[in-house]
Amino acid sequence: MMVTGWKRARFIIGILASSLLVACGGSSGGSSGGTGELAISLADATLYQYQAVYVTIDEIKVHRDNGGGWKTVAMPRQTFDLLELINGVREDLGLATLATGHYTQMRLIIGDTPDDGLNLFSQTHPFANYVIVADDTDSIHELKVPSGPQTGVKLVNGFDINTNQTTELILDFDASKSVVKAGSSGQWHLKPTIKVLDTLTHAIVDGTVTEEVTGADLQGVLVSAQVYSAAETDEKDQVLVQAATTTDINGEYALFLSPGTYNLVAFAEGYNLGCTDVEALTDTVQTQPFVLIPATETGTIGGNVTISGGSTTQHVTISFRQVVTCNGGTTTIEVTMRNISNGGNYSVNLPAGTYRVVASTFGETTQASDVVLFDGDVIADLDFSF
Image (cartoon, rainbow, N blue to C red; front, side, top):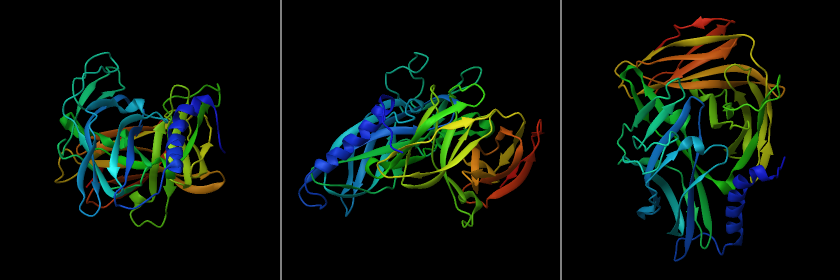
């Protein structure tokens, strides 16, 4: 369903402006002579366990096809709080004029020196890249870049520059998968997970999450768009989260999606999850509200992870899955997930029920366990060793 309204205007106008530029542009395609523009902005999909995730971006480069080499298109040299860039809020990174043609990839250079701005505590940034954890002490942890910031993050996602037209790309930075606590070492690592989205070929799904009992708007609810494929041989790939975000103070969320059909899942600790299916349509904004019911029976699943021969920077992804009914159909969805570094431990509070806990790490065979969680259960020994 198409929606309009002032509260979404800031988000939608940015997309429509790009569409109008393309529609009004001159001839398209070709790699001879002409130039076009590339607009790049930054957005985030994230989780609620952080107060802030600061990342410094120094430079963005693109690579042209047919031996065109690398070209710098933006040098923001700016420190961004990714948690301010959710639910349609974006930060412009640059606008560059490029020769027409096909570009095969992009490289994002992570900085090692913060800008002179202030963080949410009105203090200068202590590090170029760091996280403020939402705990009792508001603890601050520097985010190490294991591969080194100078190498850059390579994004293999092709795009075209057409004559007298603007191509608008969004770098969707997923903080929930990019921030990893490094086990018992006390270190935190930044392993950027970024999608490149073209606003002209993507859809928007948005809505509000409220509580059933009080009708209050719920902040910090994880809303994700997922695809289930039972045919995948590796169990970790049977449920793929294509996009995720958390609701803001007004209980609102917004997701950029490629056109297609998704399981839309809403989850917050202390509540039963909400699930429905949605068909995302190109150049369309669809609204899907959720009403969550407080969970009266809950339990905890936890344990340790180890990777034999693995470094402290290698991590295990633990996915908590359930077979549920979404809008009348039975499917498998991911309730929540955690990235745990080698030697670390995890603990997740969930509504009572039956779960399939799937653990995976690079280069190793995926492991899984079935867990029946009763009210008051504290399962602390669901360990995974690779």
